[in-house]
Amino acid sequence: LSGGIENTSSWKDSFYNPRTGEVLGRTASSWALILLFYLVFYCFLAGMFALTMWVLLLTLDDYVPRYRDRVPNPGLVIRPNSLDITFNKSDALKYSQYVQHLESFLQSKKYNDSQQERNEECTEGEYFLQDDSGDMRKKACRFKRASLSVCSGLSDTNFGYHEGKPCVLLKMNRVKPIIGLKPIGNPYINCTVKKENPIPMQYFPSEGKIDKMYFPYYGKKAHENYMQPLVAVKLLLSKEDYNKELPVECRVEGSDLRNNDERDKFLGRVTFRVKVVE
Image 1 (cartoon, one colour):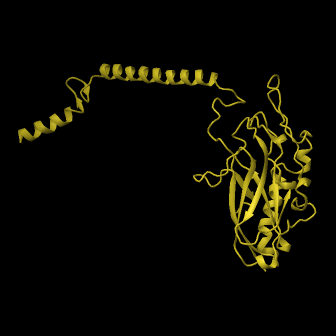
Image 2 (image 1 turned 60 degrees about the horizontal axis):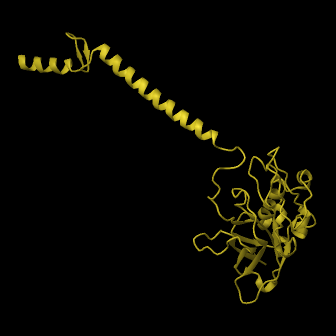
Image 3 (image 1 turned 135 degrees about the vertical axis):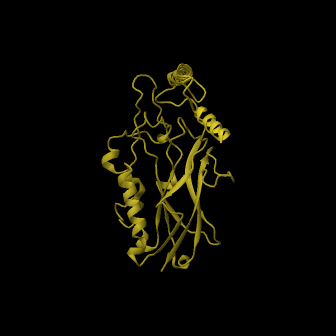
């Protein structure tokens, strides 16, 4: 019995010893000293971290990133935002989602004329180079929605979907991270359909041209009003093409921008499917 009492007492003393005043084997002064040590130690670490971050931030530029080699080439995306465009040309409810998406995209993404009027009327075929001295904010070249012609949604509010000849809009989606990009050559969009008989297409602007005046890009903060140029492609499908799933591939051609990397199917190109039901 006495042994049991001693064991219980010993177990309790390991947490608090009333004879010495120790808690978990340490006196109050010992606990105060060790807590003070860790407080000073972690304050020192936090101060070193804050100092390091402060020095690092001093080396950064608000307008130009220090390293700009993360995304070497732009990709290509389409609007409407779907890689499988299937609709019945005789049923407005079947293609209304695509029409509404295109109209919303052209209105909400600052491509409408009221927004673009604030931008500069640039010289076609020439890079829009701007001096880095003085005000770091850069001007943007004007993109005219009317340059998309029948695919602009201005003259044909259905973007050709009601007649089975749909329009798609293409843009380079990685231009913005690539500050200073100046493609060598004359970039343009070219689309092909993987079938025996080629399908005629119309490009707007003509020949699917991506004008040099939209390059280079100076960064999100400096180039606040910049918007990527668009190229519209109208697929001139015939009755023979209806009720068939047609794979379409569009590439950026005519420049040093890469479009044949098998590891990245969206680098300089995009593939989508179109099926029109009669």
